[in-house]
Every structure is written in structure tokens, then in C-alpha cells.
Amino acid sequence: MNIFRRRLILAIAISAALLTACAHAPTGTVSYSPVVFVHGNGDTAALWHTTAWRFESNGWPRERLYAIDVPYPLARDTDTKPQDGRTSTTEHMQYLSAEVDKVLKTTGANHVVLFGNSRGGNAIRNYIANGGGAAKVSHAILGGTPNHGVRADINNNPGNEFNGAGPFLTGLNAPKGPNGDEVTPGVKWMTIRSDNNDKYAQPDGVWLGAKGKPTNVTFEGPELKGAENVVIADIDHRETSFSPKAFEQAYRFITGKSPATLTVVPEDLIMLDGKVSGRGLNNVQGNYPTNLPLVGVTVEVYATNAATGERLGAAVHRKTPGADGLWGPFRADNKATYEFVIAAPGYAVTHIYRSPFARSSSIINLRAERLADADKDALSVVTLTRPRGYFGLPRNKISLNGKSPPAGIPPGVAGVSTVKIKVADAAGRSVVGEFNGERIAGIAWPVAENHVVVLELHQ
Image (cartoon, rainbow, N blue to C red; front, side):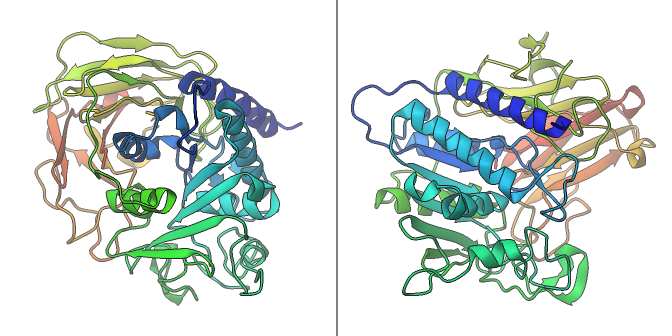
């Protein structure tokens, strides 16, 4: 058994513990189906926390909302060739299958709703078609899933999971039933796509590093024959799952009625928790992101001045996570801004600044980062990141360090989720990032002392 297989088994065991920690045995009559959220390529469960908040704000019980963390979230370059730190389509499906079984056992329900973003939809389709999921899933929602590939070219690595001409997707898309549907019968299906602003559903290969070359994929690529196919104008690849408009469609599809609200209803008592992860295999150098617990890490949380990012005294929370990687629980103030500090061997001291949390969540995952060689000449490095969407110009209002828009965001199709600046004048000063009204202030910690700074948006 290789080290990655052992790590996968460990992660499944930890996931079982997480389910126990965040869900409770059902009492009384079950009135809400469990919803299982499946993140995309290279992502984490944490991307779903605002979607879960919207479900909760419309009455969905928190204990019936689950978001999985695939241990190795990146797809292989070629599906049939083992690759360190990456999962095959079969491994991805098997992990999802095990998670669904745990949710069904925990809740006592007969079926779940599956809601996947991007690559997460591939696992959902594979599980329902080939892993026994048709008997356990009532509704399947696919946001921005490249159901016909990000490219469709039999001569360009057809073994890649995202090649629409390859065996994986052509197998899933093979006609089924009397109408030749592309979806597995017995499950209600919905796809959500952008009209023309999804970077992975473009006729030109610019976002694949092949500008001017056809992808043989159209804007309609995420649609599936036999599904309810929803088009939302101007949303980007991730907003097909994490935006309020995508939530509205998903809620309607599941319940048959519109949600009462698209906004997040604040809670008075906020409890936060999540997993600390890194890149590579624990402390071993590697470029691939993982959702495995990071060992030997310390997490501190500081309340900050919302205007400047300066700390308001000593740490309000400090923990050295155990084998499960959980940094909480932490009782938070829903009006406070916070700085999360991760210190781990082999990583830069990572400072993550966040605007106020409106509700509780057990999936506020933290990922330690390393200082890039190209950034070591700066006094400080600050990144503004939008995990649940991309920055688009001119549709979004964005500023960083007083510049609006900051450099590095191309106009047109929204395809960049992070923007980085090198602070050249002075370390230790305040840096502010803003996106469509959400404002985050942080301190430019010095590169010379091996610090990196992240301003992470909720939106």
C-alpha cells in the first residue's frame, strides 16, 4: 500500500470524525433531505460555507448540510496514470460514495441531494452512473461542470478527465433511455451555467494556455440532455455554484418553491471551526494543494481593527490541532474582523484576514502557504483572494492597496480569483482590499521574516 493510499484511508477516517462532530442523530420526523456539497478541482469544503448559510437562513437544519473534503482534490493529468497528490475519477467517486453512505447512516435518510461545482459534478455523475448512487440520490445539481469537456480533442491527451472527446466523458454522455438522454435515469438533474462568462466553457483556448486555438466546446458545454438546464447571465465558473443566484435555482429545484431570502440571516452566537491543510505531503515540499490535516501547526486568532487590520490585543484563540487538523472550536463575534495566523514547519507564517462571519460554520478551512521565490525581493506580499468566484472587469468593483482595479486582472471573461501585490515602500503598514462592497484590511507582514498575507473574501 503506497503512502498516498494510506493517507486517503486516514482522511476517510478523519472525515467520519468530522461528520460526528458537525451532525447529530435525527429526532422526530425527517422533513429536509440531507444536502452533500462536492467542491471542484483543487478546492476545499470551505467554499460552500456561504451556500450553507443561505440554506440555513431559509430553514434548512445545519445538521442536514454536509460539505466533503477530497483529500487530494486535483485531477490527474491522465486519469489512468498514477500521479502524486492527485486522484483518479475512480478514487474521486469512491470517496464520494463513502461520504454519502456516512451521511445516510448519520441522518437516517433514504436519499441525499448532491450539489457539485465543476469537477465535483464529474464525481457526482460517475457515482450515480457507475457507483450505485442512482438508488441513493434524489436530486443532482451540477454548477459549471464541464460535462462536455474544457476541450474536446481526441489528439490532445484524451485520457484527461476534462477532455470531452476522451473515454471518461464520452462514457458518461452516452445516450440513455428512449430519448437518448445524457443523464442517468431515476434521479432529478439540473445544470447551472453562465451565458458566456465561464472560463472553462469557451470556444477559444485562451484560458487553457492555447489562445487562438479552438476547444471544440461551446458556451453550452455544461448542459446535459435530460436535465433542467439553467442559464444565468454573466456569472462566472464558480458563481454557477456559490452565488446567491445559483443558490436560488438550487433551492427551487429541490423544494419546488423560491427561497424566502437570498441574503444570509445573522446569528447571535457564532462558533467557527475547520481544518488546517497545506501543500505537498504534510511538511514535504510540493506544489499541489491537499485537504489532509497539516501536522505540527499552531493557529492563533486575533480580533482586528476593521479599518486598519491592526490587532486589538492578545490572541483570542490559540490551538495546536491534533491528528484531525481541526483548529477550533472558536466562539466568534459576528461583528468582528479577524486575523488567522498559521505557523507550520516548512511554510511561511501565513496571515489570513477575514471580514465578519455572519453565522457559524465547521468548514472554515485554513491552508498554509509558502513564500514564492519570485516574491522574496519584496518587503511584503499581500494577496486578495476570492475563492467563491473570479474577478471580472468591468462587471466588478475591485481595489487593492488603493489601486482600482489592481494590476493582473484581464478584462472580459472572469478567470482570475487572486490578485497579488508586492509592497515596496514599507512593511508593517495597513493594506486594504475591497470587492463589491466587502472590505478587508490587513497588515503587510515582512517577507524578510518569512511571512505571507492573504485577504480572503466571503463573496
